[in-house]
Length: 111
Length: 114
Image (cartoon, rainbow over all chains, first blue to last red):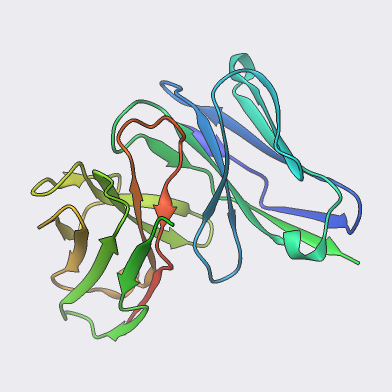
């Protein structure tokens, strides 16, 4: 079957970093997206990666290894407001139904 | 600014009743989606649409119908609501080229079926 896996929770400290892991096993791959979702709110798009390697977007970076079915979202210089759930979603094909979401990782940032 | 709006934001229904969740997008996107989100399951695709007049089954379509009367509007219909359909429902839109991997989500509709 197809699956996208994420750890349920991650705790970190303000000013440090957090790495949110995502592993996937899917029949196809056409890119991977990361979303942030605050409690009671809609998911908000953060990043999309298609090629292997690290993509730096300032406050966060995303890494992809297609051969290992692995990605991570790296949040640096954490702030309390970074506390949220982070969702990984794999696009397995072109077209409408193509996204498979992971269950999300809740990141808690403490002072 | 891309915008997806859902209504109602909160709904309490009785078992066996009919519920309609509405979604409107001003992004001029061809693709629209309905997801439900439950603890431990993440976002699961119920129905989606490629454009006006089209509806397709997602991964968990049982007990749900969808309607796409226009480019802007996409509705999710529960003909006979059951307590297992208590959830938060999200509508989203996206372009069909998939170049950015980005979906635009509405704020969600919390449905409670008693």
